[in-house]
Length: 115
Image 1: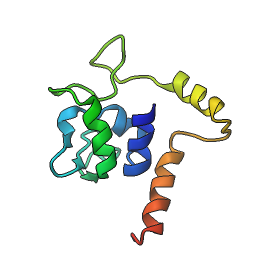
Image 2: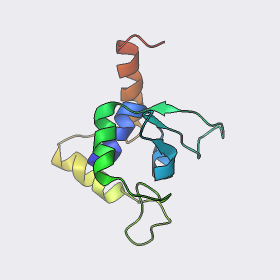
Image 3: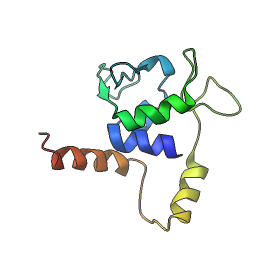
């Protein structure tokens, strides 16, 4: 959950983009993610901060598999709802959706001077 939330809050990528992100979609040298499954079907590049790339490297796999794969089927995305709600409960957070991480990322960008 940590790596997933970290990517979400630092890149602003949608849940579906993250869940369908493959290792080959990450350019570790340039620090960019290029999700293929975007909402509007258009390709784009998402910068990834260095400290997040460092975390990704710890879990890096060679090949083109999903980053967040199901433990039952490596070709299917991981359904993390159970872990998400358990994490929220453990952190005593209520009324918070995964999509709110995208809004938080946008707020951080605005606070840093992005338009």
